[in-house]
Image (cartoon, rainbow over all chains, first blue to last red; front, side, top):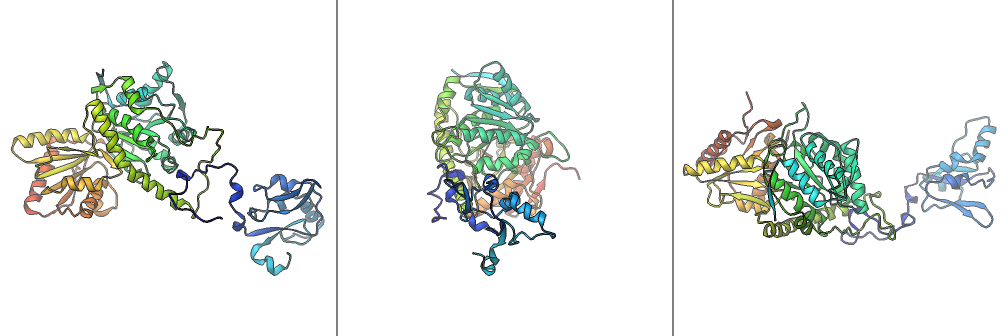
Length: 121
Length: 395
């Protein structure tokens, strides 16, 4: 967030007078869980891109590839991981219930606090 | 040329609404306000106004529609009472904090329960901290005049707050009286054209109303609301001055009746002021120096001006048509606020509170006379034996 303004400097009533301003609001620091690529190979189906409520799935348009996550805006809701069909396939094949941070998944959700610890960067 | 008409308070307000010709009215019928919107809906049906009349399924929806329409840039009015206002409550705050100059006629009625349709001020006291400007009216004429002034007050660029105009249900809401109705053209000329600064329907300049507002900016927006309230008092006086000159009236922040040389006085709001004036005249005829102060502006509360106007008294009695359960001395809100105002401005006079008229219990001249005679006793001793009296409640 840029420098905070005083009450005389901002529009009244909570109005936002510029369109397309959501990008300026860094919601990434709300995140408790971080989406991370796992071993499951991405098939570029773009389901995650379609469902992400924060437009935080980064796509290489030219090569039609899902390339990562916009961590400045991703709130860590995990919808990407929930709708990922590769995740579904990995879960079905496994004989056990998988944790949401299982390395076999395509999109894993790792606790922010444990991220460094896990050494997954 | 203005003309005199026999109208009840609801019809007087409906007439003001016809003359104002708002862009949008969203309302739901509730006694004792029903006659206002019912009459106004006939004006819509008869093509006397250009208003989009939104019939809604509840008061919560009525105020929500008002918020949406006002944000869009429309001039918006509504009316309600008691439980209707209570159902609106959530959106009442949103209207104020979003800084939308909606004007609401509030025909005061006791809040349930037990269920009751008759007047007291428990409904309006529920929104005293909501950020609305609140004007009180003694009779239909004042309700009519206040509604017209409310448009100018709320829409003023330094204010931009919603305004509630109160009058007592049935007593004035349904009481037929002689009301001076001004020329339609004069009313239109007085209120002028509303030019919203940030209309949502200005598609070339898209904007956001009502976004998430956390610990980083919510407080700054509250500070702005405080500033708007600060600004409102001089605006209300300016608008009143212009109104007085144009329509030959005498509005201010409050009305002082035979108060200047009074030894004791009562403070009242709404219709009881009419009864109190009669009692003041009677007691004056007996040679007793009594006076009355009628609250016109309850929010913002003109504390300093009130303290100044009451400072010369030997004793003061406040008449509260509602009670603040569990507050200091289980007193009424008007007393509590006045007590604080007097103390804050160094006025050290004995003050007593008289809670009266709850649920529409009649207030008679003899009872107000008793309040004055009690005040003389207090003035004589300088001692307040009984801080709060629940007037005319049966033991």
